[in-house]
Length: 113
Length: 112
Image (cartoon, rainbow over all chains, first blue to last red; front, side, top):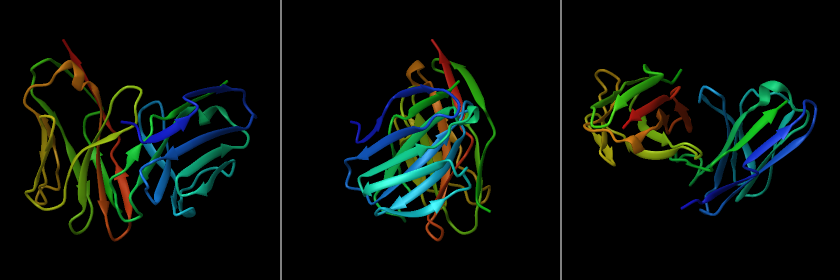
């Protein structure tokens, strides 16, 4: 049963546009994450939030920015997309910051033309 | 630094074949080791984990044994099915740094 929800499922856009992806978890977890998964299935963590506060911000371009309104929601905004941003963006959550088992959403596939 | 190495990028098998996906890790102490599976159109999900030397994790016919001597956590299944076709990730985490490190993933394709 899905407990980490992501919208939209797919998004196609042009270079330079702004996009925003949403993530909600109903597990009552304190920690949420954004990952980027490329066409070779490599998983790269982008951001980690614990109780609405940014904990880990990996080296990602400044055009990416996470937004958290409460601990159940973590959105991702890309200000001006570029072709290399085409990927699947996965949201995940875990009970707390020290607990490594993560629960993933189904992902949002972004295609930049 | 901590890291996980999966040797096989892709494995192609027929149904009822024996599966081995190799996972070796680099980390000090006793990290927790994980296997995650990602089916098409879904996010990764935890298959099982192990935290101590010689501990065996298992689920859905898959198993792996934590081996600190060889720093390995190889995934095995005696008889694969077409429904096992997925991407498998080995991962590790150490409580001291609260991070999880994923391997590059292994795409398993099982033909009927």
